[in-house]
Length: 631
Image 1 (cartoon, rainbow, N blue to C red):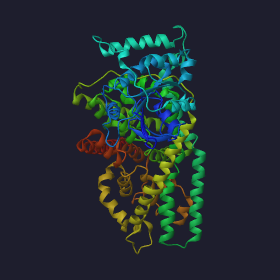
Image 2 (image 1 turned 45 degrees about the vertical axis):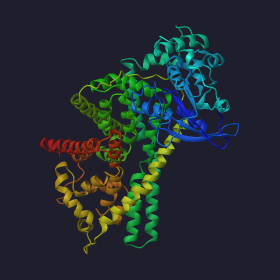
Image 3 (image 1 turned 30 degrees about the vertical axis):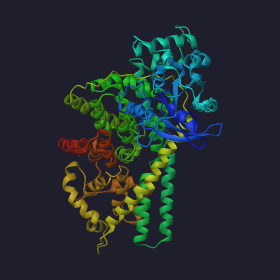
Image 4 (image 1 turned 90 degrees about the horizontal axis):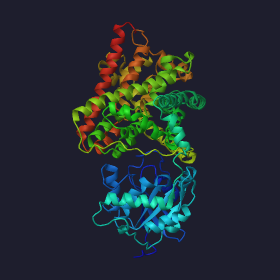
């Protein structure tokens, strides 16, 4: 039955992880969606629209990647529900585009046959045809189409090749494929599908000789080697941390100079008073103290994007499978945990690819200990202050690497304990991960993703952090004191009084009330910690003289306890770093954990445990160091 010309039909894209669905979705719709060269990136249904060459408007859904329609994991259940028309507010698709990796037909066609058996009209999209041809595979789309009884289009979605031909193939009405071609009475469906796929590949997909190794095969001989693979993996991580410090110095210097010039310009326009203080100390100082770290955050997302796009991320998951097993997890948990280095929220959501319900809960519980990009400004503020700039920049990446390693290893230990307490899981499955071929980076998608994340950071700085900076400035300014001393004014303010209440709780950790207040405000967003310090410490020292110095690190280095002792001693800074390694990232994470785990008790228990653990670990570091005479 054909559709009215003014009614947009719904097209669903389905396929195995790494088949390139999201790349094709972007090519069809022009939407800026994240593309990752490993399984589990698409964990929700994305929608967009486009027009065919015939002038028909089509609506397209990008379904989560799945290996079968048995619905063993949450993301597979979403895909099955979408195909059945059971998603709230979504009709059943009028047509399904089965996206397969042309170089892995034997595995990917299993899902295609299951989709055809649902009785939906289908089009087969042979994606990554370039990779298949480079590996020596010779495909015959016409024979595939004849054997399957459905249209087959060869394409390379990452380069836009074949996309127009695919749009032309999306016609209505489209004949249904006949599942009886491979299903027969007395034969198990799985066996029938496997036998049919073997015959089909012999007919239409001629493979190279067995002794011919592809470039990916030869590279994996080194990169997946039990020794050399780990050397390369650790080398990549160290290189990434070095880049975050080394390459970002120049643009950070530009931002710092711009911030200083803007502050000086505002001071020259306005007389001394609350308005000037608000703009210079509250807005420019608070927001600028966070925006300064934008280049390093952009480099972090560039680093992760390169690992995803080139195909190395799947190799890292393979290497980590043995390590994850010692923590009671599988290699499949590595991908959500690694995503949490960028942000815990998508990392927690990516656990939907885990079949085991208990393993998924454990992974959600420890994901926030993968230090996210929001903590990066805190680390990048404290680490150079701890080491001093004249000690050589090569030490800073090593310390940052140690910070990430400590959080990761601690997460594995807690995961092991928690996994043992939860007991075995009847839904547990073997770790299955497809190794995509190595590819050149998809720079267009990587840069779009980096710019998107950088812009999101700037938007947060211009909204949430700006608002909190103004609020913090007001709390640290009012009510006013008649005294002229800056420290006396702060003590009399609402912020100073809040610090008095918090100081007994944080003083055993080596912090005063101001640091305690900054920690408290940072539960809204970790980056706010820097903005809070910029506002809280503006009154230390010699007023305008200190403002001219312009560097928050210089202000912190000069800060002292009332008895004249330095506040930011090396031991206190290590204690602060340890606290931020273990404390939960932000309150929005709590809401996402509650939604994904289906339990507010689990989310609040996670918040309470991680906050208490962070306090105890920081206490142990600071008080233990003092007993050893370290500070």
